[in-house]
Figure (cartoon, rainbow, N blue to C red):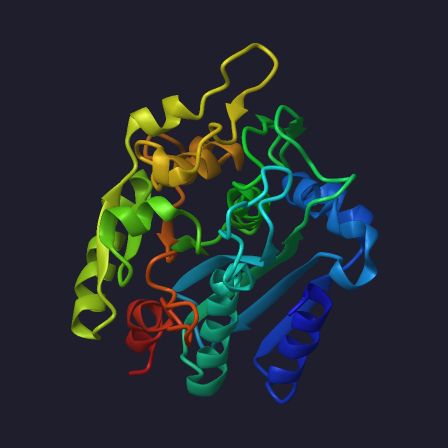
Amino acid sequence: MAAPRVVEYVKETFSGSKNVKIEVIDDQSKLEKEYPLLGAVNRAASVIPRHHARVIFLEYVGEGEITETVFLVGKGITYDTGGADVKAGGHMAGMHRDKCGAAAVAGFFKTLSLVQPKGIRVVGSMSMVRNSIGENCYVADEIITSRAGVRVRVGNTDAEGRMVMTDLIAYMKEKIVKENVKNPQIYTIATLTGHVCLAFGDAYSGVLDNGPARKNGNSRLLFDLAARIAEPVELSTIRREDFKLCSGPSEYEDLLQCNNAPSSQTARGHQLPAAFMIAASGLDKHGLDSALPIPYTHIDIAGSAGPFPGVPRATPILMLAARHIFPHLG
């Protein structure tokens, strides 16, 4: 399903809902200017109108006093060729399923629209982009400045998932600061790495907190809730070494987006992208030692999203509902 069709589907899904607002960015030049990392991934597909990228924003505001605000960023790669670092040798099959993170965001909002919890606000984004290969595709060694002003050297175009989510994390961070949001929690949800499948198997998501989220015990709470509702996850940890691994190797860039190997062949291959997204989005300026700590949790669903061929599992909607919706149902 191409990005414009996803927009149609989402609008149709929520057409009768009075409590879910939808906003769509379809201007390709605006995407490139305001979400430059996403815009780089979109470049090859941007020459074909039916493959043009879209960013879909959804918002739900429950009745009563708002006691928590949840921000969801979903990876929505409509098809992943790998880009210039093409998925060769038959590894491209099934890559229409690389949008399960964005689908989970939409599914969470569908749950919100049905049960209508009070006292919670949820802001979601779906980064719908096709990682195509062609004469206009982004390539390794390009240096692109993120929305947060961080210079990123591309190492592998098949590490596009972190690219399409990072600028949206920055947007959510800006929103939290500007609106002085109380009790925020940011999530990224993505079929992101083969490494998480090697680490935890094909039935479990990997869940990773930044410092403020760990202090709040978010991943541990998710772990316990997920076990109770039969959607188990595994806890993982972002270490200082992960930030060191993505630091820029030269004076020209601040960060290295990825090394030149697949995540499955990289030590700490599923932790590294989380560290990159924190640093490239400017969220590292909102750690435990800052004046405004912002909790952030990354959920890698590459193993748990479901078999291919087969039916997707809708992970991690139920776990997130247990964490953020059920407590508001009285």
